[in-house]
Image (tube, rainbow, N blue to C red; front, side, top):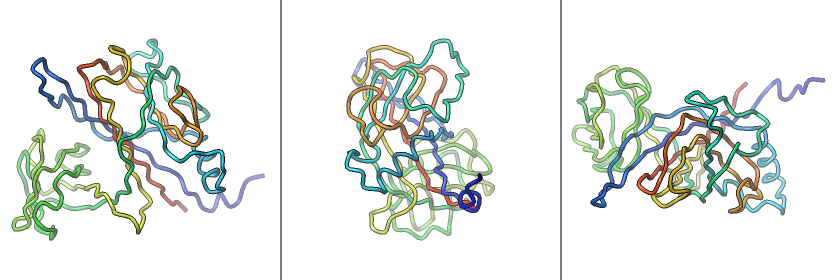
Length: 258
């Protein structure tokens, strides 16, 4: 028999992920190689078990999101790996895991550009103080440069100018809509969190192709494959050794649908 309550209303989890990839040069300097755009990642069925256990105050759970794991997957996947299954509870071949650096509540602040350049977005409707948005991530959601994210390095109130750390491929214009992920000091709480994990230069095996990642909680420990899996992503091979640092951001948005 169908569950009528589930038919009437749902509270799904929307997940997305992106990463910044850095390389350490022989002289010790770090350079940003690539800032990858946001993309969807699968929330697996066992995430519901974790939520149920936390809501029931189950004493066997240590916490919610406890570890961020990476794996080498299957070399046979090539550049187009199959999606993880809804019922997956572990990665295909986990090789390393680390506790997140931060888990913060965020809210989306939306805007429409009046104009801009390769590295600025001008929005006269912005009223925040100078430097308010510094250090936050801005993503163009529609129009010119849609889908691309940049780090804000300066904001000037007098002109509503947001300056980013890396030029866009095309100048921002009045078609560009954007959102800024603003960390929120709680309470009050929002229904969206961002998990940041830094897989630094010495983390993991020194030289392997990363093809998968996932978050684990509940009973998760530093032991590989332990705990309850929350989400999973497979992707084309990404080489990682002691010269590469990968900073991964995962957002989980609890969205009500009717």
